[in-house]
Image (cartoon, rainbow, N blue to C red):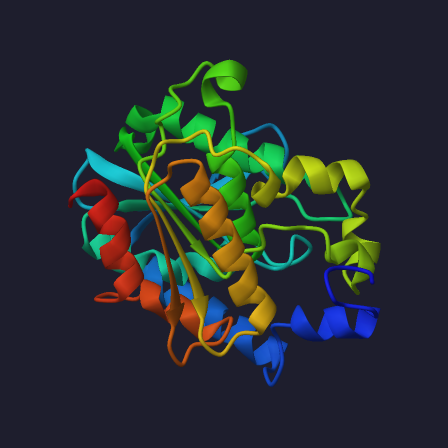
Length: 283
């Protein structure tokens, strides 16, 4: 077997193909149009640098209050596609709830090694925490979320030794929402993604949240669409059990009727994700 009870690449690819029945070009075009519309309605600081490389940028969507909490969103794309500009649409519901939002860009595989994506995600959080006043936010009230590959990155942020490696408090993240995340990287070296990701055995050990201690004492919520493959749901349940074993307050749920992409609509004004993130901050 290659991974668990999967004997062939075709079987793994089938379970980890979220595009089943979807037109990728139409999907991305819709996100781009929705995001542009949100940028026209919101006050936005575009391409704020959080690191020295061109990829290390974030778009900050500002709430009306200058001391608003800050939420960082990490996009999906299986670590090898898309960017922050396609995902501005996730910000509007949170901004309306009084929360500023940083939609984070990061470099992609194979332009950089897999571990560099994780480093950049951590750098974004560290920079935002240290520069809250420049952003016009209260960075002592910070939360994170991510979708798909971004869900993996959000989970990796919870496995970070913030005090030991950054000199920052271990409780700097007040809550995390991981949507359709990948927490066990072991299937991907056997998948269609490997030529892009170029995962090594060390990468799998170092960057699979399922194998790492949770170091951030924050509530975590995991969610997967009810129409997604069984592997996405199984990975969610496995990671929920892992977090519970580390004493984390964690919830896990299937979102009925949602596939891997429609689930993002819950960020919309009045949607469940905006409310859940607001609950992290008691807004």
